[in-house]
Image (tube, rainbow, N blue to C red; front, side):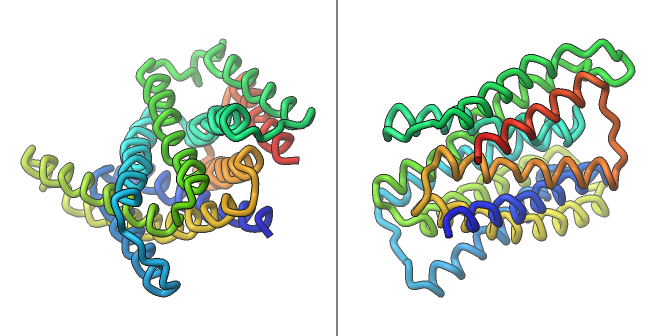
Amino acid sequence: MWFVLALFSSVVFGMSGFLMKTSSVQRCPVVPLLWGLYLTGTLGFAWWMLYTGDVRLDLSIWIGGWVVGLGSAAGNWLFMKALEEGPASLTSPLVNTNILLIILFSVIVYGEQLSLLESLGVGLLLLALLLIPIDPDETLAIRNKRWYVLVFLATLLFTFRNGGLKVTDELNLPGTPILFVSYLFGWIWSTVEWIRWRRKGREHVAGSVQKGFWWGALAGIFSFGGMQLYAAALVEGPASIVAPIFATNSLVVAVLSILLFRERLSKLQTMGLILIFAGLIIVRL
């Protein structure tokens, strides 16, 4: 059952990422998007927490939720900034390589074992990371070095989000309250950012603000569903397998972006993308 939950978490969460990409393509501002995402996400987890009776908000829940929330909020903000600098079909898979750190953490700290196939998958992911920057096709090369910094920081922060759920699960802390607090943190963060954003005189893009909010609100529903399924899969399954399955949500974003937005990649970038997907698939076998 944990395998099925992990697989569904990948598909559902991937839809959230694609909706965020759609907002970016339509040049909607990031702040209203994230405000809408964390609003519906927080409401979703609050509803599920009350529906299941899994209501627990002691100090340990708040601390764990704040850590996961910091990784989620700051990671999403950096991820959206990275999408403005490079194609989603590369940005999303690369950010999802935070699974390498989660696998390493699970093996060293919790004693989970990597099979030969899983080790091969990790090697393919590392090779892909080496190939991405080497792009002789100047017309398609990602020339802005800022993209690489944004992707690196987003990857690190998403490790706190996805890996944090593994740690809290090992501490026997319930996943739903942790996620509720983390999304509440994200909503507070984005509320503060929206106030600062409006003070800078950005009210003139009211139409795009409205669109960004609704894209974010819809993405938040899928984000709630995907993260809840991921947390449930971690309860029964090993993080060294569940995390890579969840990371294949990038496949949903990449395929839909290529089909609907006709994004173009150079040969080396395409090879890197194939290696990333092959690595994610092999790791989960």
